[in-house]
Amino acid sequence: MIHPTSRRNFLRSSTLSALFAAVPGWAKNHGCERRFFNDAETGVRIMQATSFPTVHMNLYFHSRCWTPDASMFLFWSMTQPKRGGVFDLYRMKVDGTDMVQMTDGKSLSNVALCPDGGLVYFTSGDTIYTLDLLSLKESQIAQVKEGQPTGGIGSFTDDGRRYCFDLQRKDGKPGIGWLDTRTRRVHLVPKAFNYISHLQIEPGQGRLFHYIGEKNSQGYSLFATDEEGREELAFPIRDENGHEAWLGPSGKLYSALREATRAILVAAPGDRKPTLLAAGPPNFWHPGCDPSGQWIVSDSSNPDDGLYLLCVATGRFCRLARSNSDNGHAQWTHPHPSVSPDAKYVLFNSNRTGVPHVYIAEIPSAMKEKLQIPFQEHAL
Image (cartoon, rainbow, N blue to C red):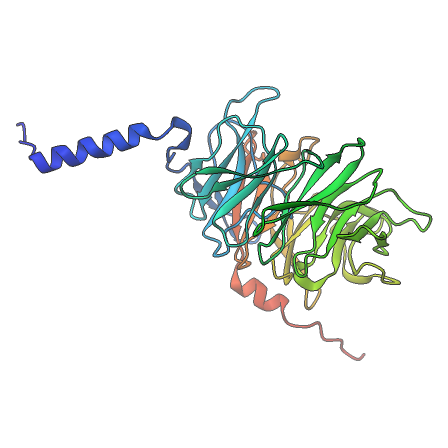
């Protein structure tokens, strides 16, 4: 039996079809590929967010990839699975739905989501762009005349006023660039650097820039400088493993140490000595914290003992879940846990299925409550 179609329904269907056809193929909603399971040891609920057989990975453990309400996050996907393939930027809701490809083969770096959650900032060539998170409207914001932005990880101040990025100066040396998002003026820290890695602007006041530099006579390689580049202030942390970040707006940096020491230390630039935050085992690897600096989730390596949740206030920690990734050479095999702003979720990488995918672990409130209880020493 053929049911008659009303004129209203026909026009509505035709309009929707025309609108959908006008959307580029790469910008369409791909629905969801999610599947759920529980960690065999801790019972923590985990969602495998992607399933398509190509490489997926999160931005990085200290990248701003979550919206402020933790309802949506960004991740990379190699749309065409091939050697040397280009990564495109995707967005997805925290429940695994509304997966949208945001870029299509565009070479971009220094990606960071503005803290207000509306615009993604990135560099491509000598230009800074914004990409509207929902409409995908791309806009040119400013041209970098002091040098050429290079592949790096963009960072923001909490107020969204300053966007920081890596660049190569005209003299060929690495440099630090930052954009005033209100005036759209690009600034260059006027200091000649021989080496810079893991550049991150301090999120609270936004006056200091952290980077890994050349090791000094005291054995320190973690430094900060101000916007005038007047001097290098060292963080008194030795044996760092190259994975560190600002501890929220505290003005302090936390860093995991190398395998022999198995710890996480905290220090402010210029301090005489660091503070011990947590001593292993496990062997902390990439510790990522929420924007407030209250919770850290770190993966572990040599041996891989899983993802660990750490309460900064008490220094207590416990295993959250196993990543079951092989922790190989490729970056997408490193879990790189990224904590959501509300500290309810952890985005991480794993190739547990044989294909690199992104996963989300839900942090149980009961687990956090236990870790917030200070350790009580008992007299013998």
